[in-house]
Image (tube, rainbow, N blue to C red; front, top):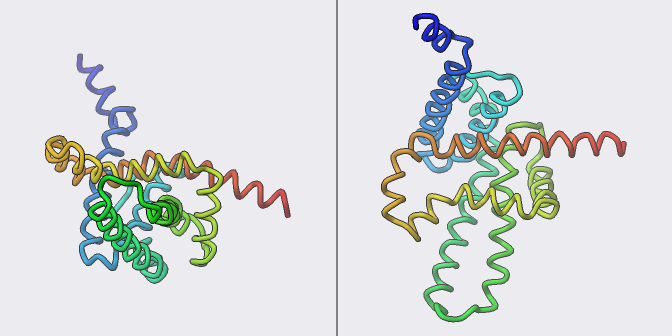
Length: 217
């Protein structure tokens, strides 16, 4: 029995490695929430979160606090320049969506078409832009251009990823009781766990695209 417990609680055991990773995701999520409270710092905080997640996948690195704040400082300027327009556009899209729904609740108005297109474009920047900022040294124009290119190449993945990010909002609007029961779990783990799931796929997409660009050169 002692041998069994010793094998489980060894520092290099599978159980302890997974427990360490889970604890790192919780800390990372709380750091992200703390650093997004001023609102205008949501961009660099999100880029720093994705940087740490990529470290999890690439280098099997479980340290969180120092890498997060190092990336937060490094991406502060570009993160704000990317995050503020995205936040303003999101607020504008929500306002227009509520206005259209309130004005034409029983009809599909033609104005929904440009609104949906804009939602897809802003969603692509949310799904791909901040991970690109965390992973590569790119200009804001390159980040937006690549995000829209990935939207055209991977529309279903983009839609699914955006739906995963918006899951708390969807639950609040459709199943509020379930949302309230899960809200504490989301505060502990929601954003970081979502990024952890999606960034594994994004890492492969980015590496594949980079290889294609190198071959074309």
